[in-house]
Amino acid sequence: MTDTPARLLNLLSLLQTPREWPGSELAERLRVSPRTIRRDIDRLRDLGYPVEASRGSVGGYRLVAGAAMPPLLLDDEEAVAIAVGLRAGAGHAIEGVDEASVRALAKLEQVLPSRLRHRVSVLQNATVPLARGDGATIDPQTLTVMAAAVTGQERLRFTYRAGDGAETKRLVEPYRLVSTGRRWYLVAYDLGREAWRTFRVDRVSEPFATGARFTPRELPTGDAAEFLAGSIQRRQPELAVEVSFAAPAEFVTARLPSVFGPLEPTGEHSCRLRAVMADSLEWVALRLALVDCEFTAHEPPELVAHLSELGARLTRATAPSESPPAERRAQPGAKE
Image (cartoon, rainbow, N blue to C red; front, side, top):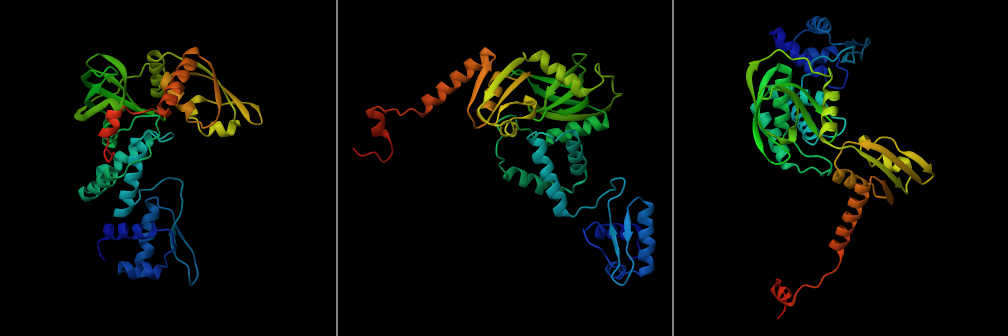
């Protein structure tokens, strides 16, 4: 193999497998001399790849962890597996999966061959995730288009659906994508309204990067997460929540999203939650019901009333009811 760049890429691909390679085996695989292998190893080291050599009759070369993350070479199966995993995490706004994951997905999908992009889409479409019930799902393609526009500083067009269902066309200068754990938001300067805005990504459709570049404006707060938090608080009235649980604090903490904050142990098998939240009454009630233990809601009165109504509705749903005679006769398989 006389093409040095191609040989270096092949050598790097071999070294990125978790094993130690004897120099003679590398030389045989690449059809070059051991001396050429030693020179190529030095070239990789000059490029920043930490290649470690061990001496002796069974010694060899292996790639180890360094001070920085060097470029990786992935085979087809590895690239598809990573893309599917990133899509699943980004599309369902899993807590802890932030903008960095979306940037990685955008970079990976940009260089995936069309045959691999097709495989990723097929796998994604054939997979049904277990719903968490605490956030809206998102088309990962929407996230990757937005992430690319943020990184490339390109103006973005899309259709936005408001909470009342009204749809509008928007042209924005995207600033940052922010994940709250439950949802993704885009912080952007809205050119039509000449003001900074936040957009729920699950309400965005048909995003399109126009290719028109822009110089980023200075965000009023200087931090996208802080700006988003302020925007959410202005739109959503705060709830001062107080709830007692008949279970240890560790048990309840493991079953509540981190947005609820810390719990106060009140006994070996009990704890109390006191938190101020800018979330909907319905969502808070649902998350409390999913904790899977006895609890008592003390504040606010609106939450107490909503839980009472929800409990009554669930009770009615399980109450036996007699079908009218005509309805019973109409049922399939019913005997006359």
